[in-house]
Length: 111
Image 1 (cartoon, rainbow, N blue to C red):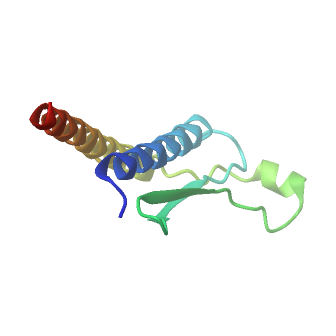
Image 2: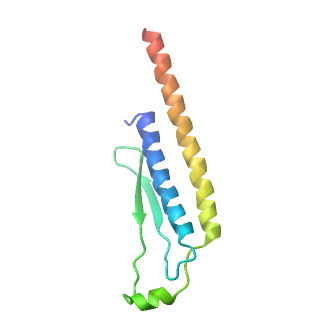
């Protein structure tokens, strides 16, 4: 069984990757031919969260065609993703705080 601190830390790392991806998408929203990357979250076999960055591949293989296309970044979606990431990050921080407090109480009990 995975402990609460490890689970929360994997969640924090996953949300950090998600925030970095969102920031990169927003920064490139005016770049012609840019396709946004996405982060998929899944359960880790040992517990916790596994995050994988998925960068889109240009299916045409023609660099000139990609340059002439408009950006495919939906800023409204990116802002919603950023708000969700903030909430998930806050929840994981609270879990770290509670696990730390519980560990302190346990040590005080045995001391």
